[in-house]
Length: 279
Image (cartoon, rainbow, N blue to C red; front, side):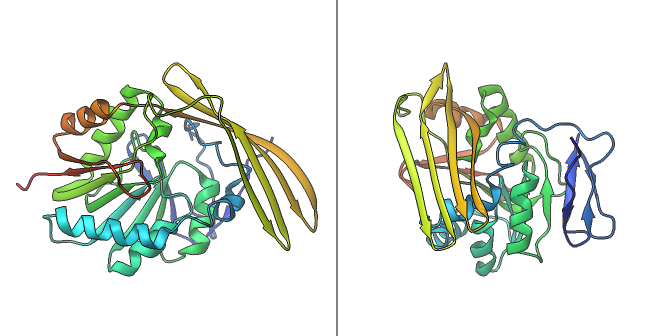
């Protein structure tokens, strides 16, 4: 099976590999490196990336960005305005956060989601990398990891690695905001979920029955998608780790961050706010 080639403006998409920043550009195209590793979880949105914003069209990203901006101003002690969104997806949060005078960047494991992100924010630099071990080569004043993307690390060991890695990207006085996934006690296996999008030229039905194996939530998403060109069916499997409040707090403290827990957060899932000490 041939490797797909994605078309971007030069210098706007970069590949982060094994703690080295590699610029993969040639005539405006993103080409895979010959020694490119397969990133865990990178195939999660290979089929549905272009549908992502339609499926979550009811999510109020603008209001969430305003809330995040207030939290950054409340807790940040550094004086810069550089903001990195980890697991940025299609860059809907970044689109609105940039309106609050931040110099924004995004990193995500999914090339397909970043293709959509680049179309939305062509002036923003995006990076392909795993939240566990990406290395930007610089630090930022604010770092966000939202919409429960942290759950994709799957294991507590990788949670600790991801929080520690993100913390290393904070300037002294910088702030990190992470929106958690469900905990083992709040996840309910056997629950049927359905999302329906009904537009003149786009019909989507996405259904799943929640499952659980040990400390991992599992959703096999079944998609039925209709456009004027035809009707298609496919599935995608999403596995996210279920971590306790104590485990999140422990991961932040191990990263030497002063951590605050907001139990309500943006959507009722809470927020963890980590503050890096001033030198």
